[in-house]
Image (cartoon, helix red, strand yellow):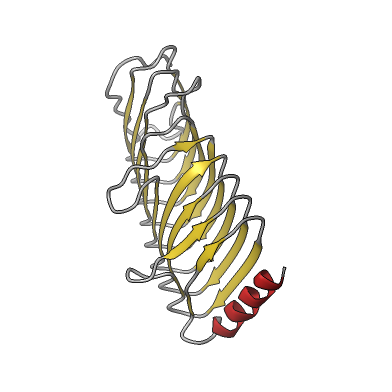
Length: 248
């Protein structure tokens, strides 16, 4: 507990000093609350990425302002990362490795970018039983989910806004279950590219409201792949399916 208290005091001393926090945490069962208010907030940088190594940690991150950045590398099991970012021109790069991790993100604003990956510097990492819940409110956002070598991964995300781009890959599952994506989109001129593959069943649930949106969907390699797709409520929408083994 002394170690955690010292870290908390150290973080608090940095919150309003150039809005920069640098973390190098090794250990388990800690709870950390990080708050940044103002523009140019930063947790981790290209030269000093926020590095977390341990199990059963809880991180609650709140950022309010424009041009926020998070560069995060987490290795361990059963870790919860809860992020709320509000503002424009935000950039979040998150890397995860481990089992049964939980990522919850609320991103409010325009021209934001969010990247969630299972590896860093090109080194693949085993990811299993991951649960990502994302809520995006705004326009011109770019979302990139690249989860390779996964035993199971579930992504549940809601997008409210237009001109958003989603590129999502979930592939590989040496375990007994496949991958799941639950997607709800309300807005126009969105572009959605989803690729799921592995040895077992892949599940996609997609609901869309809006116009002039293109979907590219590929599900392959598994048995009993399913796609439950709600037709667009605006006749101006366009949907394109690519790939096989999809059963609407």
